[in-house]
Every structure is written in structure tokens, then in C-alpha cells.
Image (cartoon, rainbow, N blue to C red; front, side):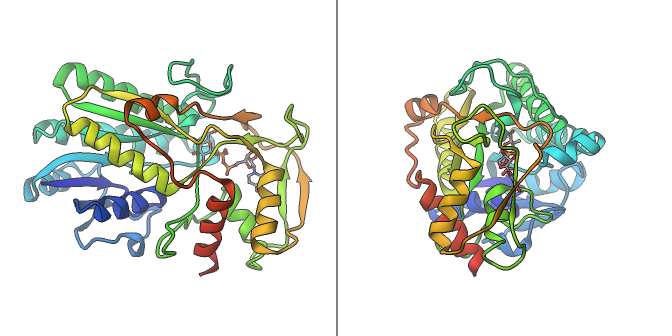
Length: 321
Ligand code: UFG
């Protein structure tokens, strides 16, 4: 029996494919390569297709014995979602509808879903708990929340069980250096910082230093992409064992400021990495830190690469290559 991984050519998708392959699982990847990269897919069982193409998606289910789905395929940039909500609703929400419908028709009733801290919006409490209020401040978070709700109703009506993983700030790369983060355009802090020692940019801009945090810069909870990957595996096994649907946060529970991340990157790369204060970026909450107690307790998830140094070190090895 095989596991279908949609969006398996993307950043987190490709690392999860690698993790499942390393556990000896049979993996089938579907990706439209809109933002994914074929060279990151470490299996030959690859279909270049859009999940909204239901006819072709159905064929994938008919040609293979699929026992469950890990769903990454989606648009995932907060800023872009503000200017192009149509695309986010179409790809994310309609895409999910197509996928769940084909799963239902083919009697596949397990899905692990790639959700986000953006479902919470501006948090009222830190660390954030799974049952805290969800009030997204952008279409990206809004569509991911709608996708979660869709799964909830499909569970009630059709018995499709799901685990939704709300990631905080994914970073790092596989330690082999074979796969890593490859966004174009890049908007995430750690790869942008590393572009300075790589000679791609002169300096890093710090978006705001007047937040109510210890050094005035935003605090985020960075989580190593391979720790995310292992959580998907445990979530999948949870469903395979006949357990109920769940929503879990996925972070380290440690917050680092933008300045602390830059400082750590300076030590690791041995480069001065000039930084300049710029104005705040719209929609950035001051602090986003997860409570991951629930996933630790229920799935026995135990992050292996939870220091900021390790995360930046692995990202550096990849980008340097
Ligand atoms: N930042 C800078 N300079 C840069 C880039 C980022 O100072 O050049 C700051 C941002 O303002 C933010 C922090 O670095 O405070 C992290 O920014 P990222 O863009 O790397 O990540 P975000 O926290 O904005 O985004 C993450 C996930 C999204 C998710 C979001 C929830 O990547 O998928 O959290 O708010 F939607």
C-alpha cells in the first residue's frame, strides 16, 4: 500500500517524502510544479499534475493502492495572498474539495494536512494552544482554516479522518544537504539572512524594532523541517491505528527574536552579516510561539533538532552547496 503526498516537490513536502522513504514506506508524489522543484523529489513515483484536475487525480488513485494522503499542495505566502485572494481560494480551498471528493470516491479515508499558525491570527495568549481562538488576518490563514473546517465536515459525513498540523516557522534542511529550501522569490527570514554571506545580497533588513519584545524585534518559534517531517509520520500512523481526527500545533515552544536569529547566523557563517532596521511588515504579529504539549503527549513526538544553531547550521550547509 502506498501513501500519496501532494505537494511533495515543495520545501516541507520533499523533506517529508524523504522521511517516509527512509522509514521504508512506498510514496507517490503529486505536484503541479508551480512552486515545487522536480529535483527535490527523491522517488520516481511522481505525477506532474494539479489536484484540481480531478480526472487525472482519480487515475492516480485507480492506478495505485493508496491507503492515505499527506496534503501539502497549496499556495503559502501571506503577502501574496493579500493581493491575490482569488488564487488562494481557488488553489487551496477548491483544491482541497477536489482532493477530498476523489478520496471519498476511492474509499481512502485518512489525511494528514499541512496547516499553519496563520489560522490563529494575532494571538491573545502565548504560548498558543490548539483551542485558542482562530481569527486569521490574511487570506492564506483564512483558506487553511476553511480547509480544516472542510475536513471536519467530511469526517462527520463520510468518516474521512484527519490530522491537521499547524506549523510555526519551518526552517533548516535535511542533514545530507541533498534537499533544502528553494523558494522563488524568497521571503523567509533564515534563507534571506544566509543570502548575505553567500554574496546574493549586501544586508538583511529587520522589519521593525519597536515591538513589545525584549529587543524590539519580532519573536518566532523556529522548527526544523525534519522534525516537521517526523510529526507527519507519527500523525499518519495515528490515523492508521484507527484513532480520531486531531489538530496539533507544531513548534519548539522557544521564541527567538529576529536579532537573535541574525546573531546566531553570524556565528555559524563567520560573516558580519550587516543588518538595517526597516519599517514593520504589514500583518506581522509581535510574538508567535506554540505550545506543542498536545502533540508530544498524544503522538509522542520528540523533536531531534530543536536548537536554533542546528536549524541554521543545516540551512547553511544546504545553501552553501
Ligand atoms: N523578517 C525580517 N526581515 C526579512 C524577512 C523577515 O525582519 O527580510 C522578519 C519578519 O518580519 C518576521 C520574522 O522575520 O518577524 C519571520 O518572518 P518569515 O517571513 O520568515 O516568517 P513569518 O513568521 O512571517 O511566517 C510564518 C510562516 C507562514 C505563516 C506565518 C504565520 O512562514 O507560513 O508564519 O504568521 F503563515
